[in-house]
Length: 152
Image (cartoon, rainbow, N blue to C red; front, side, top):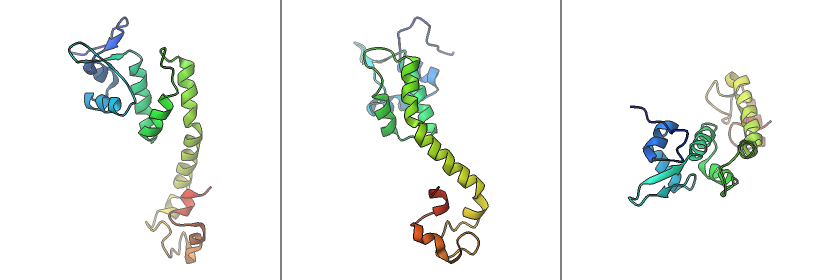
């Protein structure tokens, strides 16, 4: 049996939120311990989440898929208003926080894609010598690691 949050429902149990969001109840409890979402407790000590928590969970999951650390997600969620349900404009504003980071990640991934055979094809990632992608270790002057991926 599928549980849905009814349009008029103001709150959801952990099970309802888990089913609707596709996130395990244990993950929701973890998010709460980490300060990413919050709930109120009933007189029977059961968690109840407000409807807007579903959007927060979706934002958290999407941000995690982008590789954003939970601490950063928590900081950005802290920019949302506490006194009202966040609006579309609120969500758009905090989503802008990721733009520069995502642009940098895209550039790095494009470099990786475009230089895949040159940069990591042999598996060396600029060891002391690589006749194909780093002859005479020229990239060592720029620092350690896979320099072609790390530099613009």
